[in-house]
Length: 328
Image (cartoon, rainbow, N blue to C red; front, side, top):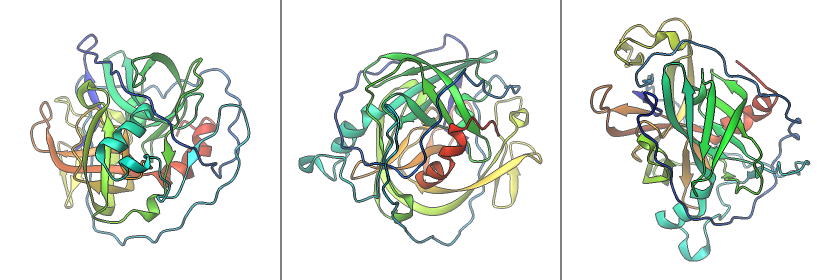
């Protein structure tokens, strides 16, 4: 199982993407206002191995939860409005509703490529813009240990970014672009309303190919994904230990692990998709892509059509903690 982040040596490659801008009507969220940003909060300093980070999963059937729509409330402050909605909000224009191309056109401007540099090299992942002044949600494993973060927008414009908060137990992180304004935030949906069989679109930067769009369906809900929280558990050959069917693969997962319930999808995910968006056919973000089960080796994993995304409602519940500067 791979964490869908691509890890490579410094100078290996970089592929900026030129995308098409579009607009969507934001809906006010229910969270308290974010604090004013102070000095950059550095990511946790952990040792990092030289090869691709691999993910960890234990797939266990679980009961499907019921759905509750989120209430709508005003978030005060300049350029900090987060677009939130139930899954019934139409971000995609009426004439393109229900089409992959319509979803891609409407949402791609809100999906970014993240390049995080560390002493071991650089890693490539993805992120989702949630405010017009540059708050971006991604996976913790994309930016953990990074000394420098560069974000490339869909139109190719680049920004430096700082880490605001991290939550390794949920594999989530919040970063903030420096000197950004007027960005298009994605609309956060309601993952409690997602059903098995729903069509979905994934957008991210697999292997540094920014703005890559794939599609599929929701294959299952509430899959239990178990990953190590300590990067020292990474194996010398680049394998990231994981559990599957009660057995351990690629070494011992260690004692520092965390488990979260994920949306399973057959939309193709590959290294570099980590932190990108899983989107419903109305253009609402329903999950943050985080892991994939590989068909090949750690050096050439490939996609088996078994991808996993952190439900967007988990992101919503964690956002206040991340904004407060959590370093868990």
